Image (cartoon, rainbow, N blue to C red; front, side, top):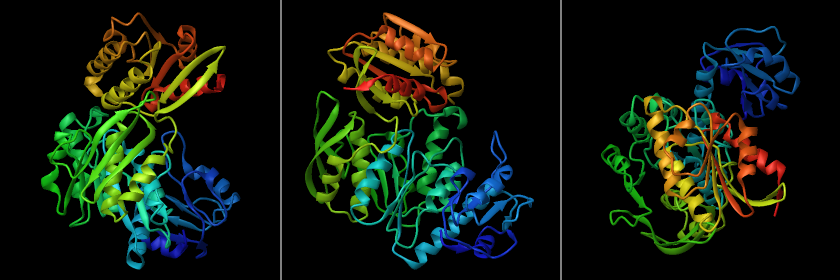
Length: 465
């Protein structure tokens, strides 16, 4: 970021204490990431108060800090009422400045599943057209989104954003920071229904993205999801529909979808601009919808069809623990690890289990499932539904991890081997104990269930084949 401390103070309605120094480095909320010229934002977190780390940030090169009260450090301080809100205000002022002086477009997406993969695909496509900024990992909340926006500069042509929500009003807060020029609605699922007051609340929260899009901005909808299709009347601009099932109402569709033995899809991309073949490198049929969403977004922003299809055919998953397939040898046993452990809900579980059934069609199938979190009163039922999916997929061994994981087992009485692990280390041990040569192991669960640690343990113990 390039701005003076005084300009930042005005942007965040704060009070500058100290010299008006130039900020020339990144904006950070982790003092360990500070570097020469940085602005450090001291936030009060659940486990730590960022004000205690101002000195460390300054030592690493931060030239100014945003704080909620003055601290005893010799560094210029911008004092505000709420540091997190100040971070959002700074991002708002920054993107307004970039928009007024350049040719920046913003495309944002939301959905219960698929946001990060779609973001990764869009980043790779749009980077072919011009300098592009997108979130690292899943920076899609009131902290991650502003930090992503603040990475853009005068040379940035495209800004790709995820907008996540764990309750009503969260996406509205994000669109108030930066209203997208183009919005993508992926799907409405059962993710975190507990925080929304039910499934209808999830749908209403996802619709906040359309309401927050700039007037007249195009909206891209997954017409295969009736809850998304119902949002069409909210659009003030053009509605572009995509469909992985060949819905005749769609503008962008996949025709003749085929899967190879590694569950990678190839298809003909059909668009108003013409047709082109696509052969995805990422694993899982469900990524066809994500690829179509990315294609529709890129085409809407003027990228050519040939470029879109070419990049999709060589694109890879940039974010870890998302349908990463590894061929490993662990303790003398050859196995295939499907690491989709970053997050989970009913819809993504269904996709992960489908990949396990496809890749492991002729092999022993093992599922290590961390619990799905933030499901409220629906937790028992949804875990049992996943258990039923596991049984239908012919899984040989089911290992649950977490307080509600035993409901998986209750829903899958037909599975021969069913156990609940005490911790990630125990889950990895049980998986290896049951694994025969050639086994296919799916590891999946909500991030807080620590299922990703199981995948990491298996990878660390093994060698790549």
